[in-house]
Image (cartoon, rainbow, N blue to C red; front, side, top):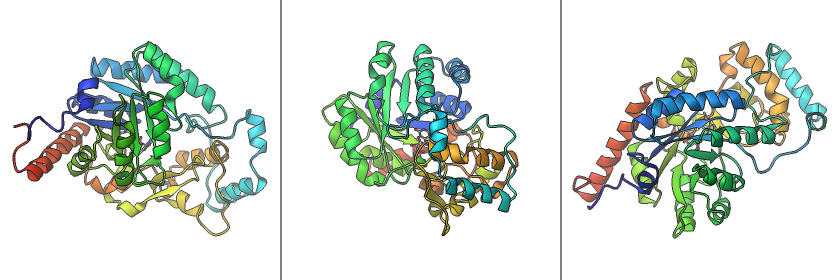
Length: 369
Ligand SMILES: Cc1cc2nc3c(=O)[nH]c(=O)nc-3n(C[C@H](O)[C@H](O)[C@H](O)COP(=O)(O)O)c2cc1C
C-alpha cells in the first residue's frame, strides 16, 4: 500500500496528525485530544457568552496553533415566541404530569435555575451571541449541531474560521454541500446526543457520494469506538471520524464518577433514544427519567424548546438532590467500546494503533510502506 491511509484530507487541511475528532463539554478533553494529534471540538451551547470566551481562551493557551473548534446547537425547527407566549403553549396536562412526578418521587423544587441546558426560549438569540464570541476569538472551527450552519459561512470565512455541520439525513447533507459548508459530520442513529433514524453504515457512504467533487469533507459519526470503526469510516470514503461517547469516561472528563462507571458497564441496548429532555430525540443512558416518559399514560414530549422549558426545573431538582437513578448522560451505542476510565490521549493512541492493525490485516503489509 502506498501512503498512510490515516493521513487524510482532514490532516492536510487542518494540520492534525490523525483524523480523529472528539466532541466534549470538558475543556481538558479538548486540549488532551488536540495535543495528542486529533481535533477537539468544545460543546459550548450551555455557556453564557462570557463564560464561553473564558473557556476558549483557556483552550487556546493549552493547544497553541493546533486545531480545535466550538460546537453550538442551532436548531432549524422549533417553536418561536417570547417566553410568556411559549409558557402559555405548555398544556396543563404536561405540567400536571411533571408536578406528579416530583411529588410521587420526592424530587425537590430546584434551588436555582442557573446552568440549565440552554435550550430555552432565547436559544436563537443566545446562539448568535455565542457565535460572535467564537468568531471574535478566531476559533479555527465552528460546528453546528442542529440545523444548517450556512447562515454563518460568510462571517466565519471572513475571519478564517471553518464551518462544519452535523447531519442525520442525506437531504440535509445535499443542502450543506450546496451552501459550501467546509465539512459535514454524517451522524448515524447509533450516536449519543441528538440522533436521527438512519444508521451510520447507511448514511456515511450516501453523504460521501453527495460531497464527491466538492470541497466539503465528510466525517463519520455514531457508534465509533474502536480502531476498526476508524478504518471502516475511511474505507467508506470519510475523511475521518467524529466521536462523542468515548470521551465521557476519560480521566479528563467532568462527567460524574457514578455515570462514568455506568458507562463502563453499559451495553449498546442501554443507550436509548428519548425526546423527554429537549423535545428532539436524544440518545442517552437509560434511567428513571427516560423510562417514566415511556410509561402508559405519560404525555408525548413537546416540541423544542417547550419540552426543555417544561422539564428544566425538575431536572435541576434531580441534579441538585443527586438522585442518581434519575440522572443520565447522553451516550451512544458506542458505550460498548468503553471498558475502563483512562486518559483521553490513550484513547486517541489506541484508536490509531488499532486502525493501523486493521489496515495491516487487510493489505497484508504494514501501512505507510
Ligand atoms: C454527552 C454528549 C453530549 C452531546 N452534546 C452535543 C451538543 O451539544 N452538540 C452537538 O452537536 N452534538 C452533541 N452530541 C453528539 C456528538 O457531537 C456526536 O455527534 C456523537 O456523540 C457521535 O456519536 P458517538 O456518541 O457514538 O460517538 C453529544 C454527545 C454526547 C455523548
